[in-house]
Length: 411
Image (cartoon, rainbow, N blue to C red; front, side, top):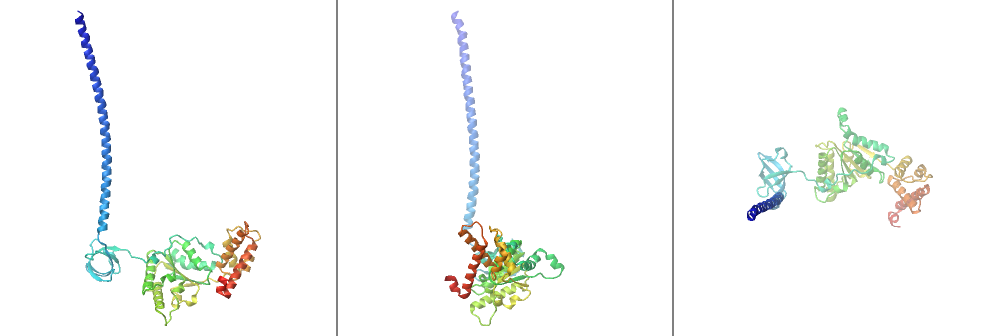
């Protein structure tokens, strides 16, 4: 009986053991399944990352191949169109040879006209691209990008001259319809004359600061070139650039360097300067209108200028900027001292009275000298005594320069 009773117990234990083993197996399988699922997800993420990286590397390889092909591509020849014959063009290459070549059909026919700058295939010399006009570095660098800090308020004693300048230069640009209504042509240019240091260049800077027009400024001597035709070419490019960027203002400082009176007896250098002058005369009042291009020129030697420059139609107004009188000197002193710490004893009227004959530049120099004297003496404000001492010093330098220039500079 005892053996029969033990059989059910062993059977139950066997079933219990099998159930535990199956549970562990299922648990292990579930764990393995989760691990494999997680690993598969990681592999999928890595696959996407590698595919993205492969795509980027492929794009980079294609870009590098394209750059390499561009480097290996033979260069194009630069030339100029001289004439259009049916569907072909007569071009002059950069070495001066003239060819009759074909034209790429995808190019805009309106851009293909005599004088256009084009790129030519090196093998067939056919026109493959229309290039923009090239400017001389001196011409392209003449554009004033950053407006000067000089304003009309910083110019003292020249109210009448400022008013005339604004009427001639700014008024036609601001109110062109009024000139059309009155049926008159607006003035083309202004010539500023006067002794050195009276404010001619400052007036031009004030115009550049106050107007929204493109401002092109250069010194006349930059247009005087060594080789024949170079000066005239630069003048032509200067006016072409001004027309392209119109409304614009051209400022030529020291005009007498290229605008001096033409003489019968002249050296080769003088003749080249005269060619440059003739190109300037043609651009200012020639067959091609200058449109919304205004010209400001400055010189302190107007007696040297050629009469053709001074006639109306080229410079419609000649504005003389004289040595300032007493009231103008007081205004200039007020402009230069408005931000200076001054003592209560400073009387600008008396200071301007003792600075008779001073130009605007010399007045500015006297103000700076007075400030330096104040700083050297450890003062926090500039007094009347410092101004008198500075003016006496400027007068002493002037008298030495008038007597003997070398003594005044080096004694």
